[in-house]
Image (cartoon, rainbow, N blue to C red; front, side, top):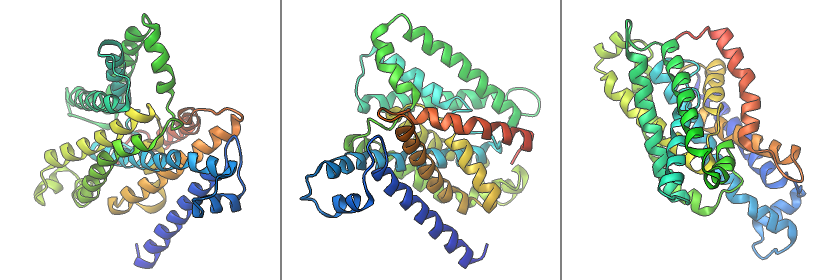
Length: 332
């Protein structure tokens, strides 16, 4: 891709994301006029109702950017290391594993804060990712895209049953869990942002640094090995980054699905499969999609709101069907 075209794409993407951010601050169950939004951002002394509403939406919007970018990058990494066009944290059961560990933490260890959720979620996401990969690698031919998808679906079903088994006899656990499990950014705070920021930064650095090796890996195992790439190590490092990004986000926002599936796949279809472009554009696209979904949830559900996880699932399910029919679950 020519440099001018690349600059044009990135500039357009950033402008679009900026418009989404502005819309997130302006639109919701209570809509604010654009000039009031600008005044609230520029004038810290403005104590009007509109300014207070805008300032309350700022952490929610920033968290949506971080969470959407994390899920987009995580999906891009998982699709690349598995060479599976329908791989993402929710399809491979990683989000469900994080959910199970959070439920166990609530039920048996009395955890009740985001700082505690995050470590349980990361442990659950990591263990589930390893388990799914091992199961998919058993048998003739090793790990294949279809085996990975089936292993993820089966594991997710089993873990969902375990979540219900732990939760249903305990009404207090169900009360805490039922709002979290839908997936929402409504409870985002500056504390939440500070908590997941290190994980997002580390995951982003690892993913960008790994793109040259992932591009070589896309040429095939033998070619990558011949060019000096340790395929096992690069897959492990990228898997850790992907699990870190999705697990940290899931701990705070709940298991938001389909963003990691829709965005990287769409980016590949439009701009090609070069990971140097796919990873950053997946971050921008994931952030924009999550913000748009959050806005839709607030506007449609006014005066309340529809949780963002419901909106992304509504948008993502048809996309999954289209991808599966078009790609026929073939390797990337």
